[in-house]
Length: 244
Image 1 (cartoon, rainbow, N blue to C red):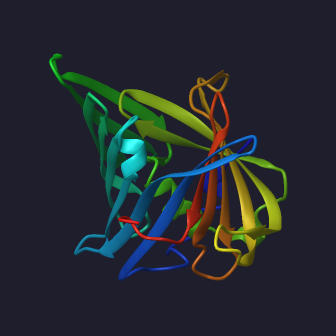
Image 2 (cartoon, rainbow, N blue to C red):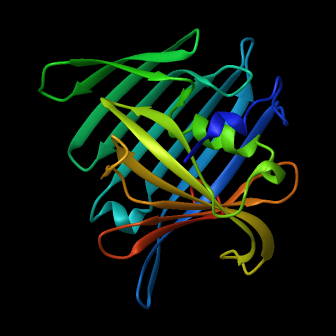
């Protein structure tokens, strides 16, 4: 496995943002079942020191009656898309959790102070550390959108580290090449296909696998994301609105 930092060795990111807002339809797929279960919105804006990005996800009204979800991810990043502060706010049915991860980069290492709030439970604090850069589940996508895809070798594995809550995960990323995909609105696009495999200690699977398809233009917009579930899968299609 080759470290992703080799591909990311660049003084400045390939793309900068002023503002960007992307809306997604979340569809549950199992066999012949296709059900529009929720909506998500990913936004980013420039700040005085870098970028602020927010990912909001929520179930639609029919799904609220079964299992209501209101999740928010917040991420403050430097101009090179390395994270400074990450928050994960989870509100799913009666479950509520709030994780705050503060990143510090010194020399060749990244450390993080993680504070975990749970309803009716003591606050938990965890320290994490990793050589090189470490990301979270928001900043890793902006990092990915700003790499030189021409420098990636098809089907070769690259790895980086993600801090989330109390865990340090190794994410193994494989570039699968350019594929033609069809979105829910019927439009077809050429897209870079990338897969993510999450492990702890490089061996134990820690999260469900994820596939992403990014546009082949300079914007590298995530067009489609597919996450595997124990039964079926969840597909996030670009398009729609948060309140649809």
